[in-house]
Length: 244
Image (cartoon, rainbow, N blue to C red; front, side):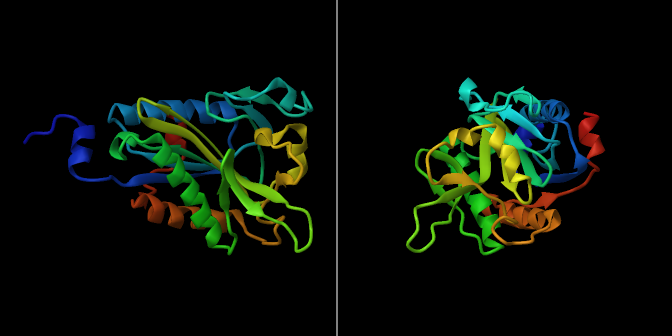
């Protein structure tokens, strides 16, 4: 059988390696969005491999498709970007590891619910490297940590946000894991609609774990390969992405 296009070839040979790139320093949001959209289009057409891109942003807020105007509590504090990802308002900034997922769901059963569940399982598995029990909750997006003390009121904090978009069966946007961000910056929004008593935001360092970004990256990579059952490779510098 002859194979005329790269996508068909990849289907016949099994799941391909996924590129894994870590961007040094901070990347502005508009540049990241441009890179994501171009790369997702290239993946959809079979012209580029799948990619997981890890980076940090300068302080900013993003508004998902379900964002409510009243959830922006301090307009003007940081730049606000409207985005096509799912979800409500969230914060990105230094000390938070953002991982953008440009993955071909045509190779993964075209099942959006299963994909979101896989992403949740990935974050939970990464947290297990640090003996942190991450959990998901019905009706609440993201990964949570139960911080209820014996005899105290119920308390759960979000440690990772998830916001995805899929176009032509290729995903983009992704997850943000709080390693050591300034948690006070979340006070300018109602993060992901979290307004109920007993719900908040936390980070690995806030939990008393002095985890470095490199250590978080290593855990994310190992967990990704295990949960998604693929090999990751880093064949090119990140600048090649920005020059797409």
